[in-house]
Image 1 (cartoon, rainbow, N blue to C red):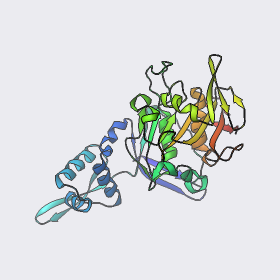
Image 2: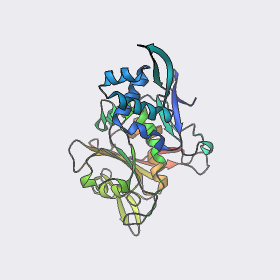
Image 3: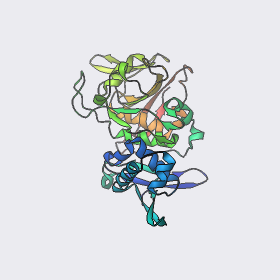
Image 4: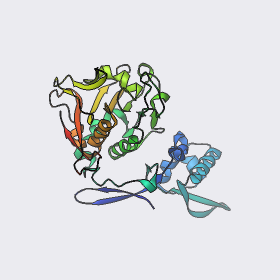
Length: 317
């Protein structure tokens, strides 16, 4: 059985985890009633008639959702009992979490990715409070489409980073509302999108990043056919490709909604920003050092071991 390993200085926790290569395998959980059934089966084993009564659902619908969950390999029969002359099958959830790994056989380990911090220690739960309802993350992770799109006809290469960002969210929230990840071509324009948003990638590859850019305290600014990242807090301009930003702002068009953008002017910068959240959450979620009224950080990615990959970050502000 696959397991998610959570370590701190005092203990190691192993959580049974379902590793999948295709997110569509989790499609049954996109149905609210099915998700409620799965949640109850995570708490205790139960049979369909009992679930229908406890959750106030039609019994035939419960049987349908049970079949979908079992076919997806998410639940199984734990035991059977005789109930009024019939055999009742008690089902239970097989997993407590999920990990999307597109190519498991080619996946490389990254032992330095996560810092051993609990959610209470790193402050990320408070940072994400506007994005949650009763501890459940409520919003859309928006990545750029891999097809040519937008005014720059660009192809995004940031989609896989949604997995690493989901690890950060999962470590600091109690669960997710599904579906979770969307291409920028699948969502409405910013002025019409009444949702909490987590935007991955810069304005060239993500149309929502382009639309939100004007509202950011640290902006992407075109300069001589290229882009620079300019901070209103410090007055500095950043030219390096490995510079990334982590910024949280209120949604400019919908009160009570928020936007988190994790981006760089190039892919290496976006990787740096993701790594800052994943490895150094306690620093990444703090206000800007030049203006404590805004949550806007600038990081630079570093390749410390010389293998050509970003493996550490330095906070510039």
